[in-house]
Picture 1 (cartoon, one colour):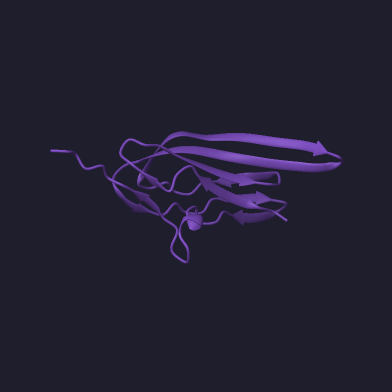
Picture 2: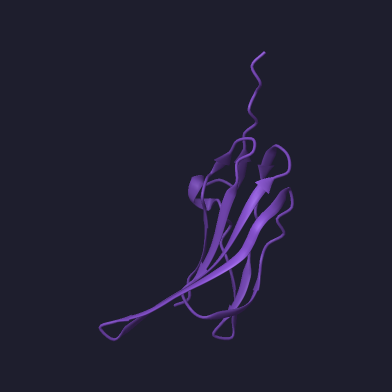
Length: 117
């Protein structure tokens, strides 16, 4: 079974905060295609890491692509799906924020900080 997942470091951001987005697959994959990070500036990445281990004859493998994002302006945004090919199959990540909303759309909420007057 191929698992291609996405993990975000936060569900909401304040002004000047950064967001880490990790796309992970448990099989060796090629031709990774990131989503369009519109409304965000990519300040880091893509960084790639690979973990490969054998324990008692069982192989464990994980490849991760990480991006650091900074929102361009306030609002509520979707981060689209990423794609990767593994075992000759094109895989798509889930919508990144689905674990933060029950029965609702995936979204990233950017909270503006109000200045004290």
